[in-house]
Amino acid sequence: MHPGSVAPESEVDMNTIGEIIRYKRRQLGLTQKALGKKLGLGTTTIWNIECGNHYPSTFTLCDLADFFGCTTDELLGRDTNANR
Image 1 (tube, rainbow, N blue to C red):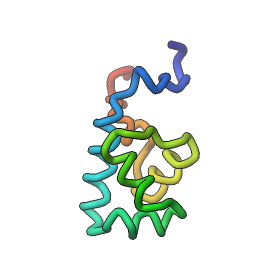
Image 2 (image 1 turned 90 degrees about the vertical axis):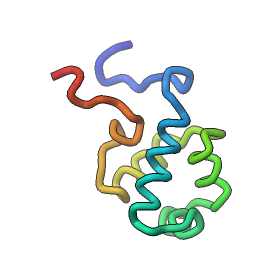
Image 3 (image 1 turned 60 degrees about the vertical axis):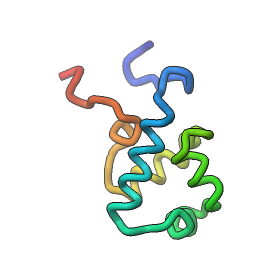
């Protein structure tokens, strides 16, 4: 894979993404419904992402990172220090 390219869905641990999003949501004391409302997403969408049933779109991933004040790499569970 080329540096800076996005890994195909099959190369990303969807459970890790969902677990990280769930953890960050809970740190803020938000329900799935409250997070969905803040991002313009349905509760079912948040639930599916957290359970690993669906991968968030690029736009949703960016919105989540902005909302949580982190990078998309962090949400993807990537070790950002691995290439340094």
